[in-house]
Each structure stands twice: as structure tokens, then as C-alpha cells.
Image 1 (cartoon, rainbow, N blue to C red):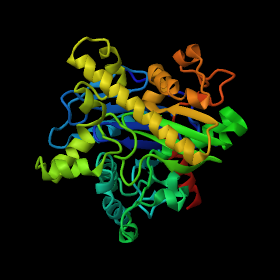
Image 2: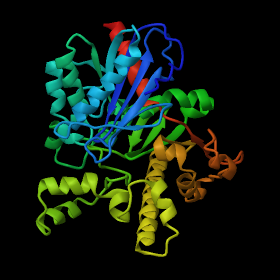
Image 3: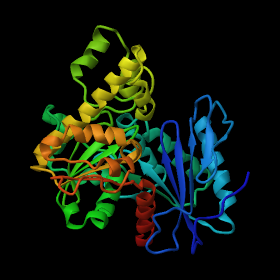
Image 4: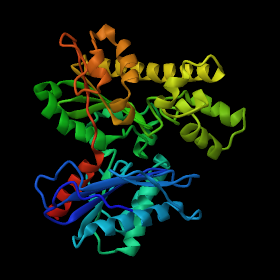
Length: 408
């Protein structure tokens, strides 16, 4: 395999960032010797379809290659493959630390923390709140704690950015005892929104300190209402199931439907969890795919497949528009709407459909700019500026880890 050269000459030890999902791991190396930390990694890539029939290992700049992973422990095998890649890239340099995106910090962890065995055990108690991501990030941490106990590891939390939510946004309409037990709205995708709080003022100046909605649209999806670059409202709540319709997740759902599935259709708790997390959303409604880029061409088919693709995308867009409207009400207006993450950054058609339903806000989209995924896709006369901003969660994680370890 041909190794690509580093993107730039490094000046110090390297920070490894691991962003672990249920079937994929993103990895990146950042140069800890440079200040400020470069936003572009020295090297990065992704292992995909872990546990599936065709796993691949891909480094940026090279075509993904098929890999064989131990079927008994495919996730740990994927981590070992990443470790091999990292060792091949060190070239005499050292690892400064390993920084992890950890989805849930509960009502206890609002800042990055260095992880030891005791803290790891505490973080495992939050697995039921984020079953698609939490166990995999913690498994990676545990594996490295055992194999490299002296290597500093830092956990950075996706819930932390939403610590600024006012209490009225955190409360759930349950008996007060539930609040005391930690049942509240936490919010997620915080590392992405944290990056937006840095990048948007650079792009939009004072406008970014006004009333903003950021639409993080990927396989998981949420909106964040921001004022003065702080989270004041968000669509995800107690779990990452709430809010927008997603690739395989329901988003907001009448609890009565869950009761019905269990009481009338006799689904077990585990089966209901599978439905809500893995079999719903775009995949469930369409029956074809969890990805808009796959469903959009299917809409033209005069078939059941086409009809279901149209239904799925119509519902997907409707839920985004409905939640934007709710956040506009909370914010008292809207100055800037920004799309980010996989779908948000790359699907001009989804952006156009969302914005077409927001003309009541005075939104005007420049079709050519939208087709080019330009940083600003609104017309000069639009009452709301519409932006497209690539997110950079891995850089946020690396930056937080470096800052924590420098201060300790």
C-alpha cells in the first residue's frame, strides 16, 4: 500500500482523535507542536461497515481498501487496524495523547476530562442514554487503557456545549422526581456546534452573534438555536432519538406509539429499541435507504419504491421545517441559518426544499450558489442569511484535549 505524505511538516508530538460510531470509526492525527492547533489534520481516515459484510479501511487521499475483521470482536479489530496505520505514520514522532468524542456526559461532565479506570466506569452508566455511540467510544478507551496505560486519554463530550441551555429548555414534563434522577433534555452534536461557534464569526462577523439556527444534518440530525454563540435551544433532548427525523432514527415520536408497539404488538423492550434506533427514519419510511442522496433519484420512479422514497423525503424535510419554525419562535426571529454535516454540506436539493418552505421568513436562495455548496447561498436581498459551513468535530476534540493536558 502506498503511504501518502503528511499534509504539512509537523513540529511536535501528535494527537490522535477517535470518533467512534456504531459501525464506523473516524480517526485523525493533529500536530500538538503548533499553536494554534492547525484545523487540518496531518492525516485522517475512516473504517466503515464494522460488523457488516464488507468493512473498509480508508485514509484520506487513498481509495478505501477491503479489510478482514475478526467476526467475534470486529470493533476491536478495527481499532487494531487504525493502530497499525498510526504506528506507520509516526516516523519517530510520539503520541501526545488520544482524544475521544464521547456522546454523553450526563448532568456531570461539562468539560473535557482525562480518563482513568474509575472515570471510565462512571461513563459506562450513560450507555443507555446513547446506545448507538457511547459503548463503542468507551470500548476504545478501555482497550487503550489496558494496552497503553501511560498514554493520556481525554474524553470530550457531545452534550457539553448545551450546558448553557436555560432550565426551561432542560425540563421534561415529568414528575419532579425524574429531574432529580437526571431525566432532562441534554442536547447532542455539541462538538459540531462548538466548532460553528468558532467558524461562524470568522465567516459572518457580528451577524453570527445574533439569532442563529445551525442544522446539523447527517445520519444523525439536529438543530441548535444559538444567541451570542451559545446554545439556547436544541431539538435533541434526553436521548439522541428526539427531534428531527434521521437516517434510521425516528426523531420526536408520540410516546403512545411506543406503548402501542409494546402492549398491542407485543414487542419486547429490545425490539422496540431496534425499531426506534435502527429501523425507522428515512430507512423505515422508504424501505430503501437511510441516505437522501440514494433516495432522491428513486423519487422519479413510478413504483412503490418511488412513492415511498417521496414520502420519506417529504416527511424528512417537513420535520426540519417544523422544528426550524419552533426555534424561530423561541429565538424571536432569525438572522442566520447554517447547514452543516454530511447532508447539510453536500445536498443542495435538501437545502433548497427546506428553504423553499421558509419563504414566509423572507428567505431567498441563490440557486447557483446553492448548487456549488457555497459558504453563502442566500440572495443579497434575503431577510435571513443562509450559509453552508463544513463542520470539524475532530479538530474541536483535539483542541480541547491539548488545552486540558497543558493546564494539568
